Structures are given as structure tokens and as C-alpha cells.
Length: 340
Length: 81
View 1: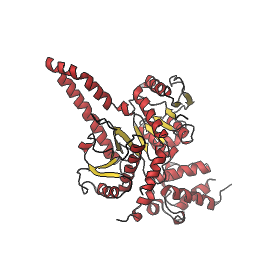
View 2: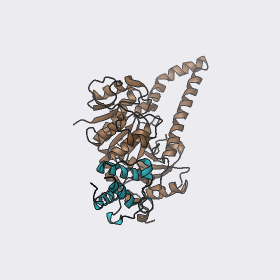
View 3: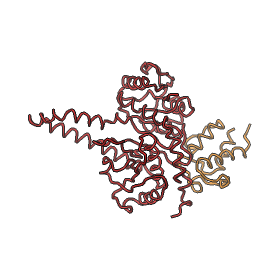
View 4: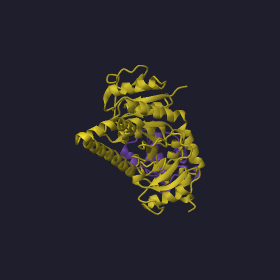
């Protein structure tokens, strides 16, 4: 039986056309869509089932209070729909905080997970292999060492199940490769990850390694992860603009720019956030994908494909299994259970 | 009709034991969520929602912030049903 995705129809910054084109692309591939929102403002999408939800949560609202009280908001209804089994996964391009909160409250955490993490696939330029998974990129501004350990397990399970990496290399983001480099929390997490069964922990990596294909999963707290992510995005934008300016600086450079255009176009597509579709909230008993607010048709379609693949590969069950077999549940990692 | 206090206590205890991965018999009326169970705000929100869904009560943010022990959570539910 095919996968059905609960799609939040509100909050797509690029509007109804992007939503319609993205949804119709995946419907043509056999993915079912239940579309939540105000029918008056939703586009007509061939093959999608519209589920009326008159309210929506905006970016400037406090997520927890809004999700608890705005029960007819499209993202709240869509998350409940997936949690209750009417659909298999949630995808929203609306406010990240509201989407995460709605998913968390409706789907609940996997037993033994203390904090879910938001994971994003980083396309590695010029690398043919699977993308590097960075988590947490913003679900938790603070994390304990046990959270970082769990993020490593969540990331490894996802990388294995959904990205097809047989033995994902898990690394910890720090300020040096040595095990004693970093904050006390990072140093403690390093020690715990190194002792974990079933996870290939390769040690620390630094910020410069994020796009270096040196690890399949890179773990950090949500504050650092979000800063790192935005730094990458800003750097890529600035360098791209500088290359473009340089290519127009004189006739010879323009000729070189023309010759490079096909290759640069491919690189641009590879690095485009729409290519990965968005971030996935790991550690829940269900599947929730936060698409970029600025997603175009490809971004919407790829976010839905990511959700569908996560469902069909049983990533949630496989994550729970790895948490248990690695001895990385909340109970396993509790301070009074540690041997060190 | 008010609920049986023991039933509500069992509901709170089983929820916390399940979600926090602790032994149910380690949770008693005087158990403090943060100090004894290392529960954080997310754990408490999930407990609040579980109680709201199960018993049809409504707990405001301010009321939720004032509930720090198992007995206070049980008292809140029993008093409103």
C-alpha cells in the first residue's frame, strides 16, 4: 500500500502554485496527499484530498501555547491526522517551531528519547555519495551530553535506513579533533559515544569539515547547529555572488564564465535547499518533515518524498531498535546508570 | 462525579514510568518531577496533555507551571472532575 502524507497547505511563502506543482508531482508518483488548510485559500490539486482546517499559526506566535490552544490550525490537524493513522507522515512549510511542536505533541517521542532533534541533509559539493546529516539544527538550543549521544544514534539510524549508508560514520562537532577538546558537555558526549555499541563513532570534527564528506552524521546542539547551518548558507550565497561578479568583470572572464555555466548550474542545483526538501524531526513515533518556508515546487515535492521514504523504510522502528541495542535509551544513559 | 484518586495517581504514575523510563514503584505521591525524575518542561507538557485528553480537564500555562509534584497533578485532576 502506498504512503499518504498529511500536507499542511498553509505557510508556503511561494504560494499556491508551488504547493500545487510540488504536490501534483508526487501524486503522479503514487504518493497520497491529504491537504490541510482553509479550502478558500488552498489551490486545486488533482488527486489530493482536502481536509478543511480554517485556522493557521503564524511565525510570530509562541509555538507551545499556539499548538495547545489552536486545535483547528492546519498544522495541528495535519499532525494529529498522521498520529492517528489517517495518514503516514506530516509535511509542513509553515513556521518551524509550530510544526515541531505540533508533531511532537501529536506523535510523541520514541520511548527512551529525551529530546527529538531536527536533522538536515547537507549536500557535499562534488561528492557522489549520500549527503552528510547534520543534527540538531534547531530543535533544542541547549543539549545535555546524553542528548548528543542520542542524536548520534538517531542520525545513524536515519542515515542507514533512509540514506542507504550501511555503516554511517558518526562525528561530534567540536573545536578540535582531540577527545578533550570542546565544552564539558561535548567532552562527556565524546566519551559516551566512543563506548556505544552499534554506532561507528569516528570522533570530533570541526566546522570546516561540515562539507568535507568526512562523516555521514555530524552531531551538535541545536544552537550551534543552527548557527553553523546559517553560516554555510550565508557563505555559499556570498561566494556565489562574488564568483558571478568576477565572471562579469571583463570580457575574458565572461567567456570563462560562459564555459563554466553548465557545470556551475549543476553545482547550484546540487546545493539548492530544494534538492533535499527540508529537515526531518528525528526521535518521534511518527514522521514529520519541516520543508523550507521558501520552498519552490521541487522543495515541496522533495520534502514529501523524504517523508514517504522515511515511512517506507520503517525508519522510526529501526531507530527504536538501534536505541535499544546500542544501550542509548534515556534510562540507559541516566546519570545513575553510567559506569564511568 | 469526582474520580477515584487512586485511579488518577496510577494514570500519572504509569505515564511517567513509560515516558521517562523509570520503575513505576519508584514514583510516589511526593515525587518531585524535576528533582526526583529529572523531568523537564517537555515531559511536563506531555503529562499535562495526557491528563487533559484522558480526563477532559484544561490546564492553563500558569496552572501547569505551579504543578511540581505527582500529588499536585493528581489533586488538580480530582478537583476538576
